[in-house]
Image 1 (cartoon, helix red, strand yellow):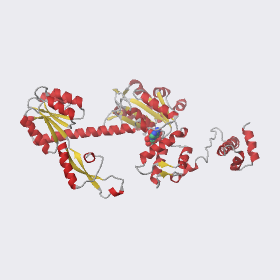
Image 2 (cartoon, protein in one colour):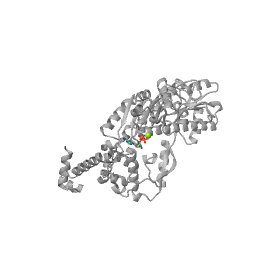
Image 3 (cartoon, rainbow, N blue to C red):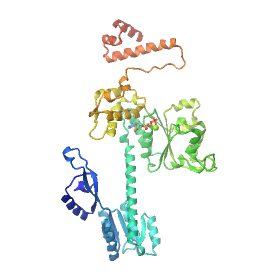
Image 4 (cartoon, rainbow, N blue to C red):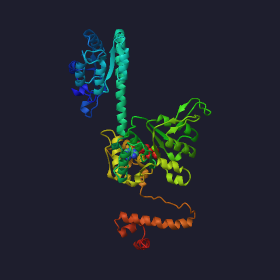
Length: 510
Ligand SMILES: Nc1ncnc2c1ncn2[C@@H]1O[C@H](COP(=O)(O)OP(=O)(O)OP(=O)(O)O)[C@@H](O)[C@H]1O
Ligand SMILES: [Mg+2]
């Protein structure tokens, strides 16, 4: 039964079954027919390409004391395919309302006993979702307006009501309820995406980040997120916003490095018409768009010095001034900034204002690079496998492939890992990810090292004199690690004699 009435379980039915079902459902207020692709894994059940489901009818409650008019409305609405219940007064209406869920109520303003406004108040306490349309006699419009202020969707005047206006009002109210529900569903989906369960990490550093984020989300203090590219700065910023009291307001992202300097000021603060060549219209800036919510200033280290002063003023005064305007506009936004640069070094080098740095750095959050938290890699891989592999396709990863992921240096951090897993899922023709579907650079990882050449020395002779022993030391350590400290085998791997190895070890250990 449920599989037919609901939208989730699809089932193919013979026609006779369907008709019987339809009759039974009609009594229970379920009707309408739709087509759906059949969803089943079992090949024997895939013969019929689609199934039929029945959509629930929308339910309307009519509250009206005058019997004839009540029956007239009910008949009109039933004819349009709605499931209708009726009540002659507020008390009966409230009983019905607590027992059943209605999409819409048509509520008379003048009722015996409890009047329409009073009933409306109870309905609103019981359900915020049900739409209420008031019905009023001509001359009582003032009370209907009062009802709208208290949460009714609309009103209709009985004397002038035609079947068409009734139908239009009802459809409009129901459409608005659908939009509200859809909006709420989408918001919940976004919230789920940025709930902490979807931000993965068990390393100590990441656990500290989660704790901090949870603690600070409910405050409006400025946050500064540090992290290399792809470490999850934007993800954390959105999680802070969506777990804060501002979650139902805007989250506006500005990439300070991507907008040309000449445009950035107008983007941030807006401008008034005629304030510069090309300013044809007055335009709101992103700070105003974010009013009441959060503004995320990404790559804050790229902000030109001139604008740094203006941002500082915004943070101190909580006001902005559009370009060309003389008056200030008060704004109330939470600022979250992010940077992949060493801002303190920029302060020392005079590229970033010290006063602004301290204004932003109120709550610093440090996202460590992925290479410093390899223990997060297996969890992230599982997470991205679930995200990118549909049900029944690639489900896990071979241990040799995981080994390669663990020893790679991840210059692009979590974003690079996600891209690699997504690519591997597409390329895999088995249930498990193997080294063959991983990019070549991963396979060479661990076979090469990075050489850090001192910046202030260009002499080849002197540089080699310090680098060669460092490289030797690194190679010897790796050979010993790989052979479990077996010096004979390590010497073989290094392609030197056993005696040379002993000599070099002695030198290394002083
Ligand atoms: N801890 C994590 N758990 C799950 N997914 C993550 C995590 N960290 C990052 N990601 C994912 O990695 C990708 C990159 O994250 P994000 O855009 O937040 O990084 P970023 O630090 O802002 O990068 P950039 O500096 O390049 O803009 C996103 O798809 C995000 O969902
Ligand atoms: Mg980013």
